[in-house]
Length: 248
Image (cartoon, rainbow, N blue to C red; front, side, top):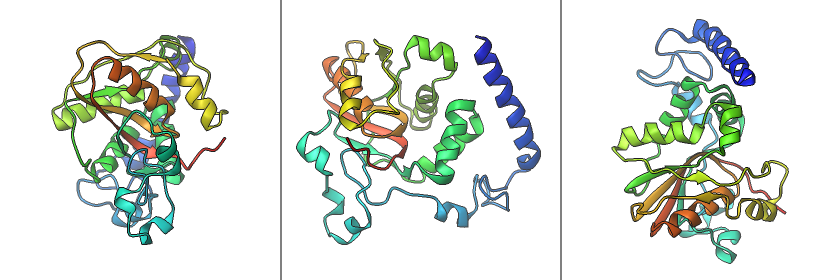
């Protein structure tokens, strides 16, 4: 609890400092120059962000610029998804986790900054998903992790997106406090997340899993497995940003 209070106090101080620079409307989040009316950014900064333009249609892994000239980008899948596809069918992840986007996500995730969250949401909404579900399923935190952090960024995002698209939320449960994914390779990540979630029965046929960052898809795969066991037929993923490929 004390750690959570210190985190909230640091977040408040940081927000007050930022307010002094950004209080006036119409200023760009990234360069603090005049922004587009009603937006968090100017056109130049929007164009300079790292967008996930050429990607696997199933897991949204970046495929590189060569995919743009292949003539088959819209239907391409990465090697991982062709050999061992995840249990979700598609992923809508418009940004890459680097540079200014990574800074925003860090501020949102670890400082619980609503402004950073709103900027990420607005950026996400500039690239509309191809299809919409019957309900949203935020990635749950284990109770121990939730007490430590005091904030579930996936739930916050799902709640805002639910209001935006008039979609209900369904809730899963993290059944094990798994090892941190950060030091693990791809195979280890999938193994680490196996059986980590449970989802209540009678969920709608089409769900979308909501998270802030998609890395290998191991978390979404494990949650999709639990959702399918609970009755879901189609599971997709929405996330704000995608990391570069993780090997191993």
